[in-house]
Image (cartoon, rainbow, N blue to C red; front, side, top):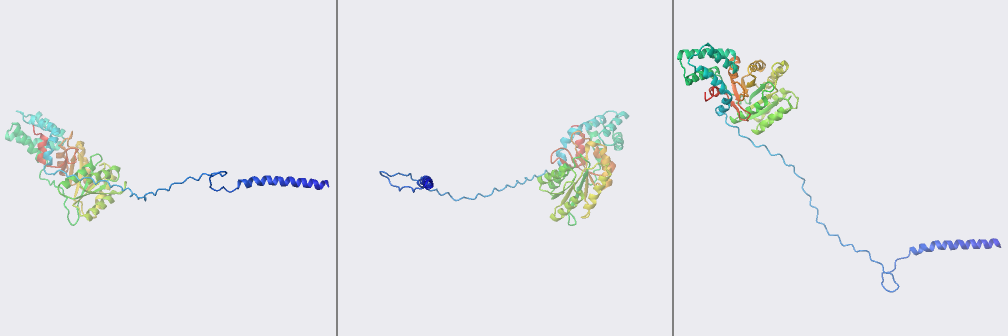
Length: 387
């Protein structure tokens, strides 16, 4: 009996506990009351009204930014070459007239003894005319003064100018062979030692040709100096000339060949090829220069081979000219840096020693300071207008 009572009590406890757990959960799950207001009712706040979203304007696709192409360089018009040397005479005479005044002051003395003639000869030698050429000039002057008996400054100056002009061999052909022929352009090879201003002068030669009405294409065959091709291309752009170039350190002969081929294809008048600067005592480099010429000649003969000489090198320029002539048969000389401290007598020495005509002279740093060489105008500048 006691067992039954205990079981009933335990069962009652379990029922009460279960009811205590279920009733709170049911209260939490009651449905929300109706939305009525009044006594005994609970008012619920309505959820906030979300305003309608304004319609945004349709997206407009912006055009992709267009990269502006760099503006083409404005073309320059080189100065006419006719009379350039005359226009530049003042610049040359400023640096050379001391030579002229020195000679004339001696020659106009009342009595010319042996010491005076030696002084004249020394003046010529110091102007880089060369020993042999100076001796010949002095002998000719002595004979003229003895026969004519002239003493006035004007008469002596005229005689000296005649002798110097004759020593420059004015009868030599100084024209540049730049006209196309046989269905292909003329080919001009530009050679020279390191430091003579070869690439810059090559660019100036292009301006000379353009000023004379030629169409020009440049070949940057100096592949060993990183800036050479870029420098030459800049010169070409200024006058509208295309530049053919190759990879840095590439084969110069291949670039030269491609330049001539391109010149034939586009029909230009002249192909101007800039070669790497070389020291005249480097046999391998001189052989390579010969290779460049041989490869170019697969298209046809080279019309001009111009040697760039720095006038300030003096008699050393003769040795340079001799070695280059043996390698590639130089047809003309371009003398640079005749302004400043240069000594113009080297023109006489080059022509007398090697028989190579000086065809162009550089008288300054300006782009059009390269002039066709005119013997008489050069002598006038050499002696100085105020002599």
